[in-house]
Length: 251
Figure (cartoon, rainbow, N blue to C red):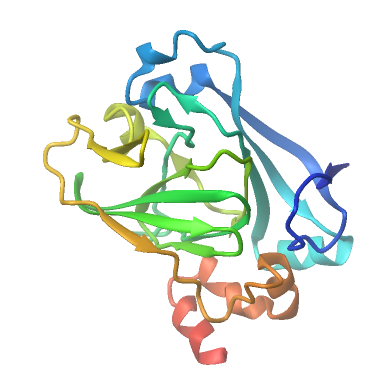
């Protein structure tokens, strides 16, 4: 076990100065992202081993919280993304879907912006075709819910370090197949926040720009972990396809 040091993070949304980590850390570099970039050739001037983002998995503030997370089949991760331009494109995560779980349903995921400003690409499918694309504008304090069965990627559009926390099922399995085969998400977000269609998709709907709409049962001022500590039953939906309706009923 190690301490994930939150020093330098302006937000007060952490419950303590340090979060405890099981040391499950994933670092994604420029080279790792080349398969999904708008123009990988424009990044030749960057060190291919330059980190773009780091994911700190399975964090908690104390042992009681760790036990509650485990009992509810959840984990809390933090992603740090640096303020980089990858050629003309903003720094972003690789992008992925969640594999189906026990049938047609796949796990949702819930994010909180701890520091910085992000755009979330969320794309929904009918079969292998993309039928809707949204870019969610998310600023510090906002919460973003990724619905089941949606592809998604996170983008840092600011000149600041982006720090995002998320709660997700321990059973959730990510798949990168669609994003790898189609060389990215449905749209690329490039300098000036211009949207460019990814021509590797057969046909695309127009992308919508929407604001973040936080679920009412999330206490935005205190953050995901504090909300979970107070009412863990409201997060049942992350493991149960009927749980979101129940969460609204329990508010």
